[in-house]
Length: 199
Image (cartoon, rainbow, N blue to C red):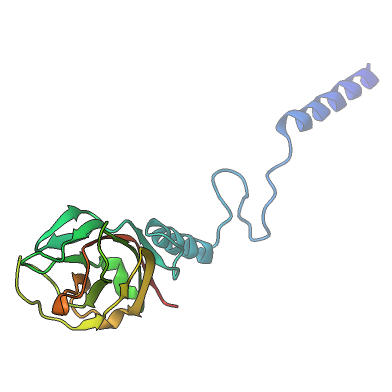
């Protein structure tokens, strides 16, 4: 009888261990690794926050800010919208387009603009533009700012323009049709990408 009681007690104890189980292990600091704890440290959280913020604008924190198909505002005698415009050499008011930099660009040092110039049928003169730091806010007349380059091409071409961001004192870039001395064709300009970087 006594032996049967001992066997029953032992069986109950064994079943208790099976059903209750062992407690969760700890990571050495006394913190449980169960539940919703991801195991990230304070440093990891900071890195994730910065990386996500940079990723919203096209890269990790410290990476480039890439704007695909940037939205320009057109001025003067031109046709087009968004990032594609026809520059007309015969226009009375000089054709020009302006892009205002996003607030996130202030943390970068360099600007790269990628664009395509497409010659109109029958045109034989080069396609000429002027890159300016000025801001256009009216249909005619010169804007404050400085001319920062005079790219041109005699054939349809993909073009790249780079400059230190500090040169653009009004936080925008203006691309003008360079019709000086009537030496430019009519053409289409498409701005495909603007990249802000620290390279």
